[in-house]
Length: 254
Image (cartoon, rainbow, N blue to C red; front, side, top):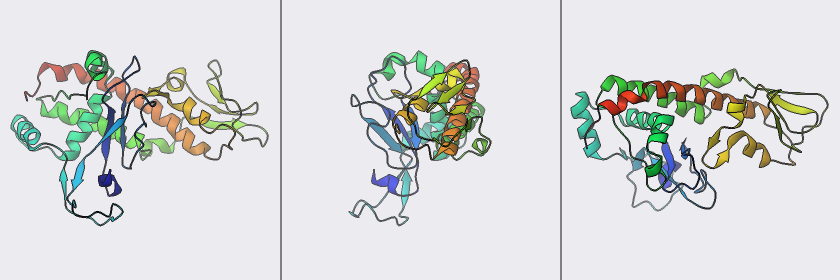
């Protein structure tokens, strides 16, 4: 985890999955809790993109910019460079992997294996497709880190009358597409697909509010950005699924 105390980014996944569906993928530029994706049943693993070469430095809070190397096997670089006739960057590989992980087709195809072991990545031998998937993975990364400019115009709005902003009881009304936090205040513009969206073992929008029960809603703009991030994630997943079958037609052999 000391590698995440410096400028870095990493993909998070589980090795074993208890839920029936596979949704245990996330990304972070910070240290994370080992149960970020699940309950106490399974631990999450974070794979940093870069490893900092400061093994002799025992002070984990030293934020000096030491030498770093990609946390990717040279063998992977060798195989991809041979297939693409050029060497991909570590970031391009990470974004491609993250894009693949958010394909529903990939998740459904390999569910049996994803539930019992670390995920394995099918690399397309088509460079243009590699880049296309990577661009979508990069968009997902920006959304999930809440850094995307797409979030500056959120689809959700915090509405209601009165001055009670306490989160008392979370209720979703599908016919109104609203999430009520009490009798007067609510978030509107919440489609059922977004409300029901899960990451890991958690229903994201519901858990966020339930974890803050009896507290004041003092971060409504952030919650609206999260809603928007989920909405756009679903859109990008559909784009990935439209082209994912092309990946399986010609794979890099490792």
